[in-house]
Image (cartoon, rainbow, N blue to C red; front, side):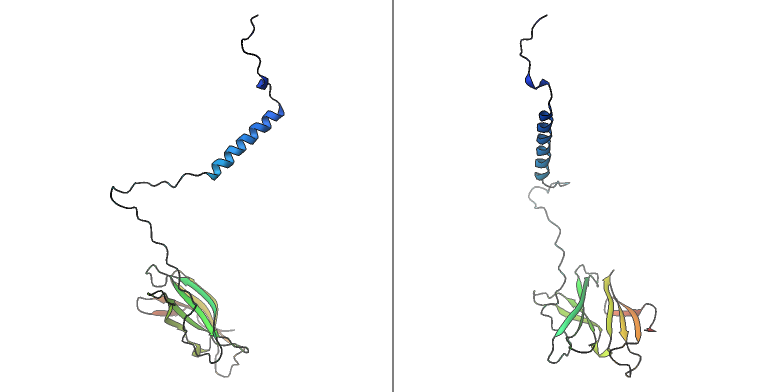
Length: 193
């Protein structure tokens, strides 16, 4: 029998410490590869002498901060109770719809609903439409902007004799831009509360 020219290797017999070391090394490689990622791929390179163009950032919806709402509140402030955003006129820029009322310490002040658009010069947004006038003595609930339409449930009064605390008429309504104005439609008709 001929002896091997190479001495017997110590690591040819596996022991539990070898498996632990191997598992630790593999876990380290996996962790390192998850931290180091390649840049994003592009399908085509720009032609020589031109720059790659990125998509424009989505326009931010108009803020209600600093808006002069056409609401007469006397010594108290106008409060934005609810707001929602969406592209109502299809121009790719969002509008903000705000439900606003006077900050009354007592009673239920009537709501107004205003459509705001961004200012071209970067100033505060401006009111471009009134969907609910506070003179109508309505309270707005179930308010949302979806699919280019404003929807709400309007709580109102069947007569001037009904106390402001207790609206007795409930009317679901939707407003949609027709190219020149917001048209209101009633979904199922008014009914008593």
